[in-house]
Image (cartoon, rainbow over the protein chains, first blue to last red):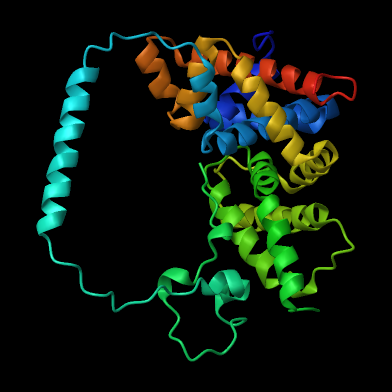
Amino acid sequence: MSPPHDAFETLLAACLAGSSTPAQHAQLAAFLRADPARRAAYVRQMRLDSMLRFVGRSPALALAAAAAPQPTRPRWWWPAFASAAAAILLAAVWTSSRTPAPAPRLTRALPPLVERHPGALFGELAPPTAEPLPTRFLLPAHLLVQLP
Amino acid sequence: MSTHPEHLDRFVAHLTAAQSALYGCIRTLMAGAPEAADVLQETNRVLWQKAADYDHARPFLAWAYGIARFQVLAYRRRQSRDRLVFDEELVAQLADEYERQSGTESGELRALEHCLQKLPGAQRELVRAKYERGEAVNLIAAQTGKPVNAVSAALYRVRHALADCMARRLAPEGPR
């Protein structure tokens, strides 16, 4: 594993860290204009950095953390936890036996309109419908991308 | 031109799968500027507007990269001269290089996830601080009592190690 060992790599590291000064940015641009190999190295690092930002918002890193050995802790609290859980369960059963049956729900589940009609994103492609379009369904969930 | 539901379904699938690649392309052309997320949104909007024109026989990513590059140039023109942006010629050179390096994004992401799990604890914690919790290098430096340059260099080394690991993993004869 090599540390940044020349001026270009130091500038690249600063750019990726978001700490470049205007002078460093200009130097980096000059390196990139002059040398295709450095352009390739810059693109490689930028692509990886962007992938890491993407993956960082997914459970992948959490999985990586789970794979790491965790220190074991004493489990003295288990009996207390079990007793508390049992008490809560009994209280819930007792309460539900005294509660009248709930009134039937008046609302019905709204259909996921956008899943059926992805064009609803901008309205103009949505098919005419007698149902009012609920605002919270106007954006298709699969287009909402979690960005870093 | 097609607004057929099947055409749009396939288009949405392409667009969704391309998000990571498009984000990487835009960040590369913008030298990692935080406004890359805004330009990605604008690119998505333009792509969606052109959905009916898209021909499924053409490679989606190449078409989308072209639109992303145009949006980066539009962003660049809106910025004042003192902002950290590359000139048009360099943007074009970097866009060509990005497209040349683009592989199968899903395969690369799988390789990256595998390689992340192989990192030693301290390096993995550094990656989690930067990319999972989104902490700035300055903050990590303050928390760890190290100079900012040292943290930047440590992150550089981790990315280097991950790139090597991914290259081995993605090599045709590499481990699967």
